[in-house]
Each structure stands twice: as structure tokens, then as C-alpha cells.
Length: 177
Image (spheres, one colour):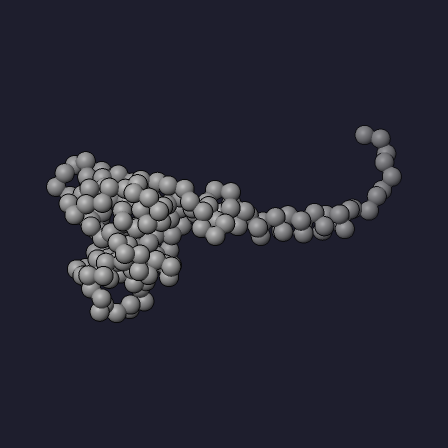
């Protein structure tokens, strides 16, 4: 409360501090990615090959692979490193209207997980082809979708049409993915 001498405002110090804060803000997203990892979901209809691809990424038989629809009823999560970036990879339940309430809960959880994922690798069985519901999901994801024709070993002539061509069973196309 005493009279203090008038001092000029610290404009230069404030400008330097603002530059430092702007620099920190510009690296926030990248830093968060390296700290928390990117959430990547493998999605698609039942039997599109999501569990086979999950196992291929992990180089181990972690998810059960079966021809029976609805084998994966809840998501399975694994951490891995992709060229220095930590990734949380999710194998998910196949998207469909299931006759079983437990499987339907798994599908609901899959949809929630897809909404929060940074990237969604959406698999379509190349031998069966794309259905309108596949196109709707891919379009709803916008730039977060990586559309994949899987099982190209069963449909070798399918054109890429802007998709990654892959056989999760043989590994063909995995490097491109």
C-alpha cells in the first residue's frame, strides 16, 4: 500500500512467456500421442477377419479365430509399438444385429469403442463384398477409417478401389497396411 516507483510493464518478458506457451501447445497433441498411445480399433462385420489381423499384429494367437459368427463377443485390447508410437489395438465384436443379448452388448461396446478410436481399420471380406452397412460405417468415420479388403487369398481378383488389399491369414498386404 506504500507508494512504489512506477515501473514499465514487463512486455518483453510477457512476449517470451507467450512464445513458450505457444510452443508447448503446438506439441501437446504429439506429446499426448507418445504418452498415451493411439487407440486403433479393428472393426467390421462378423467373420471379416478382425481376430486374425489382431493376432497378426501381435505375432501370437491371442484372439480366438473361428468360422462361427459371434466368436468375439467383447473387445480384446493389446499394447504394441508401431515405429515408436505406442498403440492400443482393439479386436472387436462383429457389427451385426445378433440373436443373442450378450453378443448385442458386445456390439454396443464395439460401437462405443469405434466412436472414441483415433483410427478404425474397417475390414470387409473380399469374397463376400461390401454391403450398404459397411459403406455407412466407413463414411461415418471420415478420415479415421482405413478401409481394408481382407481375405484376398479367397478373392484374388478384387480391385483395390481405394482400399488396402490384405490376407490376414497369409500376411499378404500386411506391410502395406
